[in-house]
Image (cartoon, rainbow, N blue to C red; front, side, top):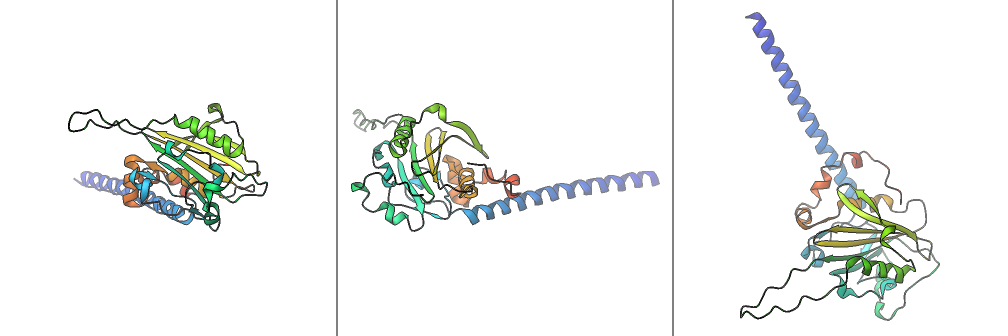
Length: 262
């Protein structure tokens, strides 16, 4: 009987220790998630929760120093916006208003002066075929669009004089988001990091124009790419304020790892 009591006590202690370990693991994961959320909020603005970003379920948080301009920056004046659902630029505070005034009549700017941090966004969601009318008539034709990537390559070539080909884009991952990235220099000497994201029915290009210098804005850019989401993930992120799927994998980011070099 005494031996049975000892065995029962030992078993109880093992179960209690196991429960304690699981609780500590859950607590550590919760703390990691909270630290990562704070890191996001310290570096990024809230997602754009209105207009086409919300309507199309595209969740994007940009570096805090950027504000949305009124359309694309003048350097992309040759782009046909009808080829995309979203075309917009984010410029550093103070430059956005100046960069968006009188865009239609301005020529592309290829100044040798250093440029502030910029983000240019091109996004498209594949359009569903329009259903027939109630009277059985043929549906109106869906507007024709060129292939997404050639349009982006043409925009980069026109804006920066860079002959971009598909083979220049190499696979990169930022947490659970997979991109293809090309890196090159602009005429002003800044670093252009062009990211292509494809997750049917979405195609998105995020083009960062990064001033020359020691990793200017690298941490915020990395977080922007990590927190990006589309579709159902975006819908959940709009509701909660965070991309929960990538936040669950926040252990390494919360630990303060160095950002991916650009």
